Image (cartoon, rainbow, N blue to C red; front, side, top):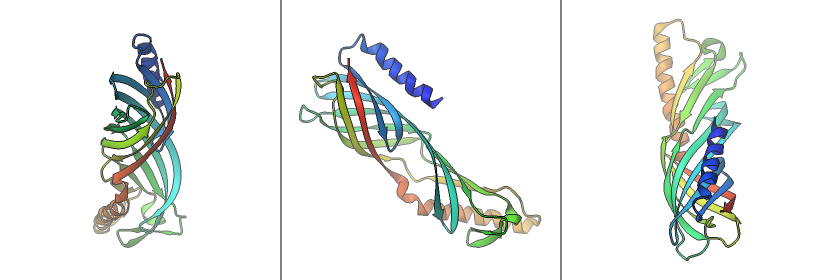
Amino acid sequence: MRSRNIFMIVLLCLSTGAAHAELGVGIHASTLGLGADCVLELQHQLNIRGTVNTLSRSFDGEESGNDYTFDLSLFSVGGMVDYHIFDGGFRLSGGVLLNSNAADMEAEVTVTEDYEIGGQTYSASEVGLFTGEMEFSSLAPYAGIGWGNAVGVTKSLGLMLDLGVAFQGSPTIALGTSTQLPNAQAQQELEENLRAEEADLEDEISEFTLYPVVSLGLTYRF
């Protein structure tokens, strides 16, 4: 579905390009994923740019005393304004990203090992799987600098570089276990410890409030 969205934005730009001379398209690889761009000149030195990005990957990490496997899924659609202040390739960029960035997480232990949840120890045989979901704000303002003007180059092909930051807010985490404890009081204590563990994890990964964006791509001008 996400690959289809990228294809559709490129197809839209291609269909528009025949009717608008000052329009370009691009493809890129970035910290937001692989993606495509559509650039339209508003006036001299000022362009608007649509972008779509997607990336899926898995990695292992240690957080709050537990070893996790993270399945990361990034997807964002954005609108940018590019201002070429020196009438050349260098530009200032600002805009907003609409994203559905998220990650599924699962603590890795054997059946004889323990989880640490909210400062308490629980065995895998007691609570089963210890899993969670991480989500970010769906709205992320963006600011950055860049090089390259897809509609201002003399050649059809060009390079595009972006360095910036997306202000995506603090992530929220929801944790749970696959098995409930048989004792109601013990289960209530587990739920309280899960909420405490969520708060600890959110504090540990709060640096992801600012997400660095580095992008390198190719552009084509019609």
